[in-house]
Length: 348
Image 1 (tube, helix red, strand yellow):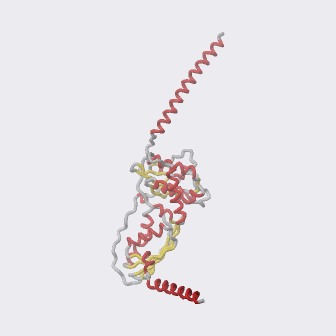
Image 2: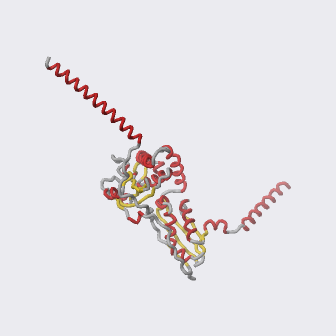
Image 3: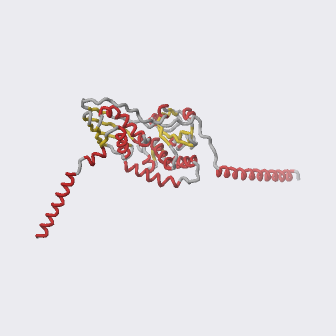
């Protein structure tokens, strides 16, 4: 009984010590992870939260909050725009700001196409898949083509428009233009080929994708030989010419009904932030819910990428050509011999 009593006493001692430890720990240990004092750090923290697919997060800002409020919309867009895959993942966002000119609380609500767990799955699957499609001796164009061809072979267009992501493309084999473009970029980046996502409009009546998707169409810009080319996996899928929209120039794409704003073709730069004289008035602001557009990208080439054959392809074509030539000569000889036999039979 005495031993049991001592055990209980020791238990309470541990609890008291833990409580004292927690109370004496500075309260800003956790808060410091979400507390910033300048716009540069604010952008970095927002980007981390977006990358982690946080749907609701709160930040604490100390400093010139008037300046912060004036630049907050730009800072948020820059945070999402540093990674065009990330920005394309956003579906909507809004924020609320409350506080004084020296200290403010920022509350963000963000919607995404995918969760963090789904994005982790995409990364792991791409990392395992891509090496099975390419080899180190392949050119960038060959690697790009291998990835493009895998996508149009293994991922079908979802006409219900319910499966829209790179995650559904990998798990169900179905997606729409957004998922095609995002997965294409992930796979290209895995092999070191630079790619961006571009959003625009498609007026081509021949395309089989729904009208709503044409009005908000998404495809890729891919850098090959230091030039940028359009690649639209969506419209190459189930297309008799499976490379109709592979490494094409802007002139060709415009003829096919693709349209985009020229502003999308310039990469974003850091905003110029002008210091503002502090005010003594309370700060309060709120943004309306907003749907974001796809990121802006580098200007592509006007001309298509010239089609070149690899050494292996050239050898195969040459080999087949030799076989066909030999067959033609052999058939011609047989026909001549048959002709002589028939003439001999007719005249005897």
